[in-house]
Image 1 (cartoon, rainbow, N blue to C red):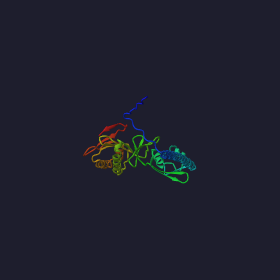
Image 2: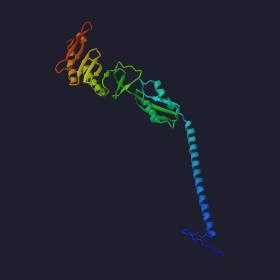
Image 3: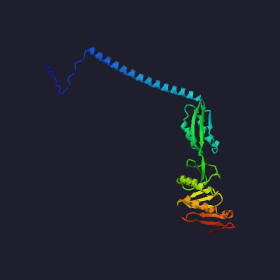
Length: 275
């Protein structure tokens, strides 16, 4: 007789009873439906993305074609321009002829125009269907500054290439941060000297706040900032007492004294001596 020994399982998980076939079929169908829905969702997203990209490309193509039909064909320059080089201005604005009426950036055109030395302000507008109208205001120079710069009516020092100093304007010399002060002194001093028929041709301010005035007659005046107008008035009173011959012999007058002045005269041969 053969004895069959039963094996004992220690810790083994008992087998789950098999689900009824109807339940198994139901679960399988549910999984298939879920997978199908996921696939449909992925397909829909792909179609939307593709359609959006195609739509965006198509819209951009239409916009580009539409814009290309309206190129900038003319730039009209307005304003009373005396010093602006028309060729340089045309060259600076020419790149905007490659833009179109709808996409051109007006602030960029304005900035380009105002970057030119003689342009004080620029206003830019569009004029249908293909024109940019650029209205310019020139800087107004009130004085030459140093050897090759100018001082504008707004107190701005600017450099103008290939432009010589204007002989009809006074020349100011000094530190850039002294520009407003020098201009103010010039206006006040010129008003005093004008009464004696004198005109300031150049005014230089040194670091010591001492001013040297070169007059149109060739005479030089030196005055400090302290009570400068009173000292000039004292000089003009004395100057008007001189004869024409004496006035022509005046070379340099130092007014930096509280109660007097020092005069240097010309000699007949062009040399000088102090008096």
